[in-house]
Image 1 (tube, rainbow, N blue to C red):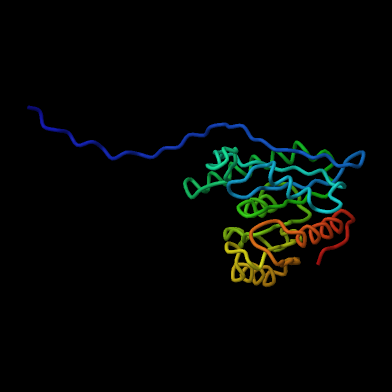
Image 2 (spheres, helix red, strand yellow):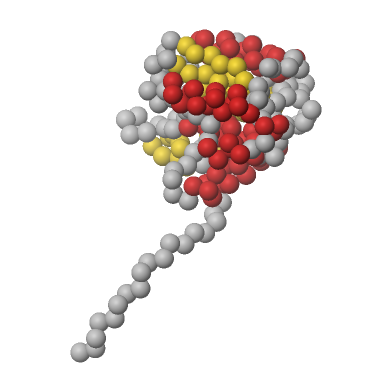
Length: 229
């Protein structure tokens, strides 16, 4: 009887593969080119739901609004709705690179007039995407509107002069983006001299009318070319 041979340990390998990206665009109500707001939804959400949140911003009709859906789709268990997630811890660095390439192409497709303002927005898990897109997508960004999550740690090394002005929002009852996390973000931004303003509202991990109003004022200053300090 031949001796049993020892099987070699399994190897983990990766292979680049293309997939279909999906985003929803709400055109500006004004004729002609318009500034562009590009948003990223939270975990377990989709482009439709995030677009609804963005369109709740007063005077948003002045903007072309795009809601980008994460490449990793799955079914929400209770409703069967198709939702998405931006990434997991598995192959994290490659997922970040893939997402940035995806966003780069979305913006290049939509931004017909590069001189007009571009703002990225994010909610929850989409906040990290908004920060990364602003700093690493290759498009000049004029503002960031972020709600209910923190700054990705790898961006702390980015030069201060590359950061756009930021509107940072959170609810006092948010059990994910807690006060210590917000304080850590604000301490970092202040230490680097990065322009930001904040809105804290009486609510949890969700869009809120106070945040919508603050976002409207922030976007109007960006659209009008008024410096946000």
